[in-house]
Length: 469
Ligand code: ADP
Ligand code: MG
Image (cartoon, rainbow, N blue to C red; front, side, top):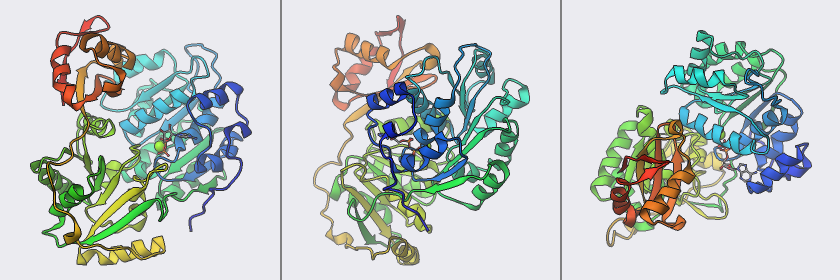
């Protein structure tokens, strides 16, 4: 059912028809080998072919569609030049991730303007931004439609249209919005559809909007030897407490815990926080700002346990997780494969722990069939009970008021932390500059002092407001 194109050739970027400056940039980014989905799709996407590509999160899909659209850009530098590429994404943070990756991939090409259009930000500012010219637009279907209806956006010059995370956009009920947006794009265009799974709606999208698309699928690469999977039988009463037993026993630095419902997420976070774990919940109904803060804190190592629903976590690029815990067994074995694929990337062995009640044994059976092997079970009683305090995250996050709108850059923040607080690069973690806020991770022990020092500090000549999250 799933083809593996792992060994398809070529696997080096320099075997593709890419501009020398692009190849040089890829080398500088540390992209030496193509990922499997890139190997499978780039020869076709660079040749202008319509394509449906299915691969799991973190497999490098952005470059698979980003490189061909960048290669095709005409940057005359005229501010009124038409938008040449449109990338539709399900959520703002995914659109932000894609925008950042496209900017990195396009660094070798001067003056490429990439504009993000998503909700949660005033329309008027975006309209002004568009008036200054854009080559590539990345956005959510709803907001793009708003701009089309107001006449502040024209897609007549779009020669590459990308539907990224198409399954998730369909989950979120965007089919009609997507259809309306696509009808406004130039007829003579390349259409690329990327998805982690392949629900029915995808075929419908393809039939309506793509021209004889090719299909490539790359199986999630994690296999038995890269991920250690252990199952534990629990009763409903034991389930949440069992999670903290697993954390105390394995002491993973970062864990993604999946629940089937948002209520379960809330309940588990309450249990873990009460026991002194740094745990945060991620589910569909959070406000955008809350979501941003949760994601930033998990990614920058200020939070040890992220408790999430499948929909909320899909498509997020969190790498190098020590452990995934399936708090509930998912009824869909393909989702199980995606969940556990979040751990054990690169050379590190991952740990996937699943709690299953008697009622869930049917779902476990489906997972065994899908994986082609029996699961290995251990008793909860075999876990060593917690000695000492829960493992604390190494970093804490400071939120600084002001972001891209204030033209703050990561370098400015590092400059202030070095200048005002005497911090070295090693004491500072990830710096995320969002639209209106900047988040910076600093070593946990130093964080309170940095917060008070920053009260008197300046960034770009302006006093700053900073607080610990
Ligand atoms: P996906 O969209 O499939 O979830 P992304 O496009 O976001 O995956 O890529 C995941 C991560 O892998 C990103 O950090 C990206 O910079 C990195 N990446 C992509 N392609 C390569 C490559 N060929 N070599 C090294 N890193 C890569
Ligand atoms: Mg992606």
